[in-house]
Image 1 (cartoon, rainbow over the protein chains, first blue to last red):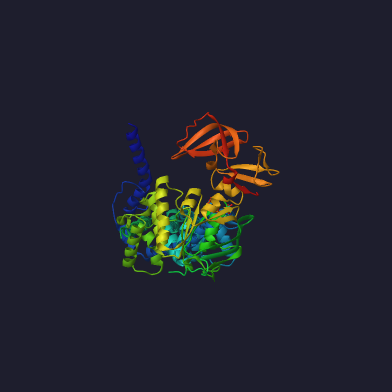
Image 2 (image 1 turned 90 degrees about the horizontal axis):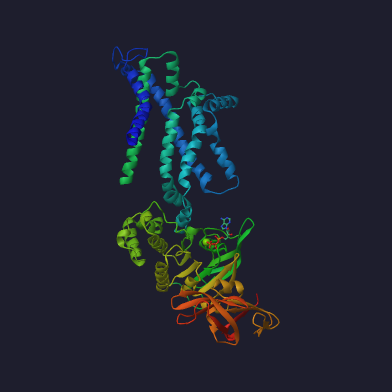
Length: 257
Length: 341
Ligand SMILES: Nc1ncnc2c1ncn2[C@@H]1O[C@H](COP(=O)(O)OP(=O)(O)OP(=O)(O)O)[C@@H](O)[C@H]1O
Ligand SMILES: [Mg+2]
């Protein structure tokens, strides 16, 4: 009985999580500006429009550029940050630990506004480049935390052992530290990409004349909705799902070899 | 084969080595020569600076003062990867994302030895430390404590070091396995002629394996000598107590106030080993009641309640004394050792 209840509960939960996504797919298959169901006329016309208009690809390119840069830069900085955070003991470390996680606690719109004011103050014209910076202010702490988790419960004497057995500092990092951090780096990088890819509040304030996918969807839904918006949304989702699958597959293959 | 002639420089020569962490003097003015091919053991209580000493010898830490020479060559500035030494760590520090074979052959890989040669050498080393060859491809995380110990040993040997450091390598093991490995280590050292510097908490381990023992206390090396000397002629009460259970009596004005008997010196302390006490024997005798008896295989240890407090005696297991018995015990002053402090 309890097991059955649990099953019902789980099904309901999953349905609740996925129904909104399903409704976007349904909306993309309509011809009407008005969201009404069932459709009077089913159509894939929105997809044809979406794929054939340049704007779709410009939006994707902008979002991808930002997300990929954020992921790569966060990964590099967070790896060293995590080592400073969790691995090495130094004066001011506890101060650094607090400073690093602080941005996570700011509401993103507040952070976005603050960053915009800051960028204007130092004379930078907001563009997708400044959005990379803005995203990183919020995402870097998260990636740092994700990678740090790998470093707790890690015997740093392994690095001493490597040095003792003839490894240079660089070899020690490559052969011992890096392999240990790798799982955290993969999830950290993935997190960074997806958080940036889907970010709205920071982008709105900091992209200037450039437009990301979430920004575009938000403004079009507010002012000038058409099924093509839903179609673009579905394409964007497929993109990030595909990325996740490719990464998983690559990991699986590497482990096997 | 290293030169081991009489006038050959010592394998390691430490002079005035000190290391401070803030206000803690973890190592305090340690001077010592470790001879070529010697099995040198460092013992001392927890926190006495043993690990600190070994880390400095291995180049993993720098002394705040003092010099260090390897066969007459100053190696103070030499990083660990350039020193012909290898260490078995207190925590073992195995590479936990690698297989047994990859752990063992790590030093070879760092030298650019090819995969095939590495495998051959790793298998040889597994034989040497008596691990089955099919452990080569097993993840180290799937090895038992004793097996991990052997992997750590094999890994240190793989770099073909001239000097090996061991930081309490057997402390985590059960008694029997420890005994076996102690013998094997000593055997290995004899066969390879390498210099071993070995840390342990265990007096027994030190006595069985070492050519010489160094006793550490609060960062200082308080006494160095062969096992018999350290045991029989400890420098002070601390060393005597550290090297096993002892009875200590104060000497005042040339007498032993505890027994109102003459003493072999004017002042200081008289160290009486438990095995020196026997019923109805010796020139200093006293009344005693047996309060506890512990069996130690072929010997028994008993606690005696006496006018001089609780004393410890060790007798052959054949003794007929039982708990609660009263007897007259004694020791011969010739079997005792006097220390000044
Ligand atoms: N990195 C460090 N930072 C600060 N203090 C340290 C550090 N390493 C060691 N110490 C201190 O130095 C002293 C000696 O430590 P060490 O590790 O050498 O002791 P040990 O003799 O190996 O003890 P054990 O038998 O418990 O392993 C201790 O008081 C310890 O707290
Ligand atoms: Mg130690």
